[in-house]
Image (cartoon, rainbow, N blue to C red; front, side):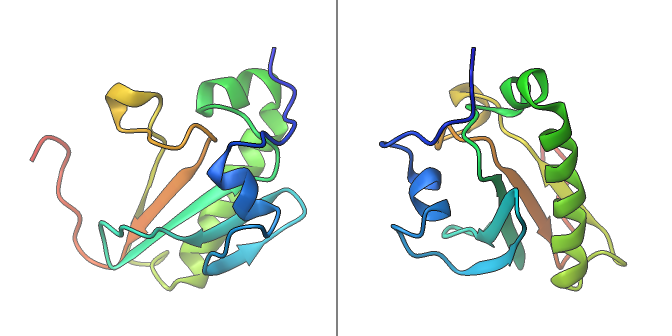
Length: 120
């Protein structure tokens, strides 16, 4: 069972710890939000919990209150980035076939323009 402890080889754990620089958008006691280094929209930020969980399913199963906090913070990031009124997308990729490349749960907050529909 996952316990949320930082993992020494995890890129996002290192960003949370300040060992690797990132352009931080917002921080809370439980989350850190920063700019994606390969943006797919005019606004593309990642919101990660400070605790390490592999993916959204593992997070929800082991720390549902933190999963809720992550979604609340995604909305706050959208507001801070000025995309909340026009609309934005929150995406969780779960494992490699879905495109997850860093195995520390993270919410992608995308907005700032009309986003394509899925499958386009």
